[in-house]
Length: 149
Image 1 (tube, rainbow, N blue to C red):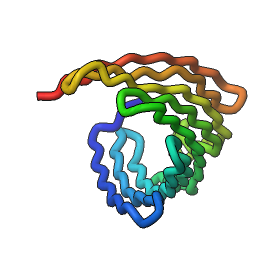
Image 2: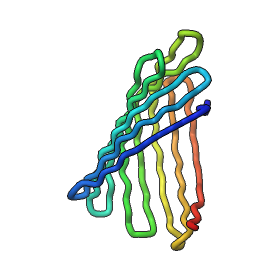
Image 3: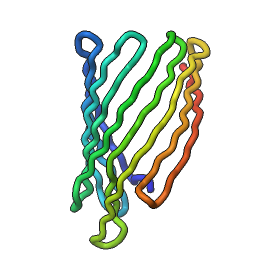
């Protein structure tokens, strides 16, 4: 389930008029094989909102490639708070046996937020669902506390 090793590098660039881009490369090593991924994100800030599109291309060693897409909308009503929703769709390829691959469609939706409580303390939360073909649906929720040093 989790990789034995993972390395990722992102390059971020802010452009004029609220535009930004992120390019990423990610290498994950699993017991059953290696996965290399490339991603591109384009984003635009308009007033109190951020609209972003992300395209991920991953390739499993010796296998076919898969694409996923994500569209995110985040609202920043003030400097202390953000609320967002992310919609995702695409496909995943998994090794299920010797030279046997399984390609499934995936879809997800995640609601998230961040609340800055002080200069050093903030809370982040997320709530969502992830569906993988007809195999399963996973619902999730999370809360994290960030403490600045």
